[in-house]
Every structure is written in structure tokens, then in C-alpha cells.
Image (cartoon, rainbow, N blue to C red):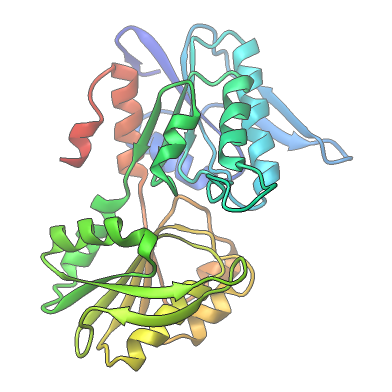
Length: 317
């Protein structure tokens, strides 16, 4: 067992993304913690932590991806089990933070689910949260415990730079993503464009017009997540209609629910670049336009630095 600063470290995983957890452990030269995470015949989650964790620094890797409610309950129950097993510190590692899209009241009588989930994780007994590319930065303030929000940008940027685009334009699919797109464009020495769209219903988008020059240029649509891919494919169609050359897209979280894969396959997109924060099912893995990059190195380094009580910000300088 690896010891850092005299205290043992353990990494556990629920069923949401075991492959990512195993890769993180391989990079840390650690065995994945032994835990039984199943369910009773009526669907209730059944958890047993097999390894001894008394006095240890414990990390639970569990993105709250589809099926969201099941994976969220697995996380909460695992945290409770670890707390009752006398773990010294419990860090919830959520590469993807589900329920994050409802981060404010946009109309009367609606919930703020990202705050509710933050309260649930804290009440379960987590001492710290490690996540990646939150949908909205203010979600960090919904917790009364430390939150470290990592970025997949270094992994995405390395891949995009290797493609050696000579006339790249980074495109924000909506006004809300302009800051993210501008930061990418600056680091890639690329131009910036914005798609003006109006959303009439959830998961439906209508593209209005494009702000910026895309004619004859290589375009990269950039978003934090792709769910039903409606926004993405509508944006790609608008770019094509305005004379764009190659059209790629990049996101941190490939939710890819409902008709997403079919829409991507049928779209004018040349490639969708994403990360493995969410485990893809067999159908999603068959999408030929999908390129999946690993964030295990960033997460393993962050876990090590949290355990050693050293800086995380230097990871992204």
C-alpha cells in the first residue's frame, strides 16, 4: 500500500465509471479499493466496503451520469458507509456533476437541483469534492466544504494542437459559452465566432445567425457537455450553410442521451472530441465520429496533490 505523508490513501469506485477509476489507480500505482456495490431485488442500493478504511484518506470516483439517480444514490450510500467505517477524510470525485444544469431559478416554481445535490453529498458525510468542468462556476458556492473544479482543457488542447489547423475558428454554440470559447481561442491563437440561438423548449435549439467569420475556415464548436446533440448539430448545419470548411466539436462531458448518436452520425460534423468523464455504452462507442480522450492523468495528479496537501492550480498554469 502506498503511503503519502504517513497516512494511507484508498480509491474506491461505484458502478458509474469503473474503467476510469481503474486507470486513475494504475497511474497512482494503487489497487482499486474493494467494495461491493449492488442492489436488492426491489432496486435499493446495497453497499459493503470490504477493505479497512479506518483513519485513511479515501476518494470515491463516481460521476453522476446516466442512470443519474442510481449513480447518485450509489455515491451517497458509499460515502455514508465510509463515514461509518471511520475514514479520516472522504473526497467525492465526480468527473461529471449531474443535475448541474438547474443552477438558478429561470422561471417560477422550479428547483435548483445543483444546490440540492450539493446538500445531499455534504449531508452524506463528504469532506471534500473533486469535480471537472462544472456547468456553472457558481455551483462551487453551493457547498459548505472545499470544492476543486478541474478542467479538461489541457487534454483537449493537446489533441487539437496536434491536428495543426492553419485557419482555426473556435465557435461558441450560444452566448453562455463565449468565455469558454474565448479562452480556448486565445490558447490556440484562433479566431472566435458565436452562434446566436433561441431555445423554446428543453433539449431543443433553433439557430438564428452566426457572429464572426467562418467562411472557408476550420471550425471547432466548443461546449462543456453534449446531451441530445440538438444544439451541436444545428450549430454545425449553420456553420456549413455559412461556408465553413471542416467542422469539428469538442466537449468535456459526452452525455449523449436520446437521439444524440443518430443526430451526430447524420450531421455535417467531421469529429466530436470528448473525454472519458462519462462511461460510454456499446452503442455510443460505435459512433465513428467520436474521439474519446482520457482525463485519468489529471484526476490522478489532483488526487495525489489533495492527499499531499499541495497546490492544484499549478496543474493548469
